[in-house]
Length: 252
Image (cartoon, rainbow, N blue to C red):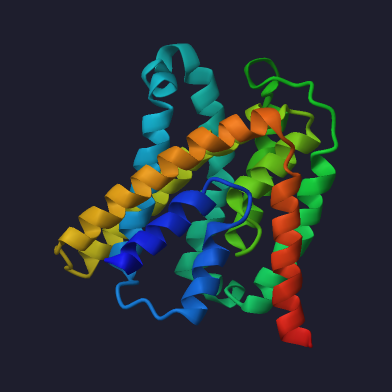
């Protein structure tokens, strides 16, 4: 059960801050043998994060008529990553990207890009400036998150900051974009689960969904509070240090 809490903590926190959840799960799994790590648990963790983000933004979702243009743009922006992600999984090419060396370089390089983007002016609002040009640029950038170490949240925030969106609005774009992405991952995982005739749902699945939901919800809440008051420098430093340590361990 402790393993499930650890995995839920990693998923819930790193999914929504710019540090890459997939890379942390790969790195930690490389050093710790998780007996409960499998498709069933991975699906449960993503369902928990999905429920966490839609619960946090339930007002925006329930006011769909008022926000229908925004959600249409969010859907459009999510198409590239879902299409490319599906192709990488179906062709099994996704496994070629799951190397420690790739994680080291992407963690470092995209940490530097995050730092550079955060130096741009804070002048564009989500409500007024989320044009279709911005939608396409951010959507294409999000495809890079399929490479472990890039971070879906990180690359979306980076792209939005380069487009001069305010930090809080950049984070909100990232969170809203996670809804269709996490939803698609959850549905795809459940489908694979059913295709394998695995209909078991245990207390471990329930705990992983619940814990992931709690950690995800709290991360979104406190990250939005943090980003209103501080820059992204702390996450940049963390990424550079982590990337440096990984590369040092590989090359030296």
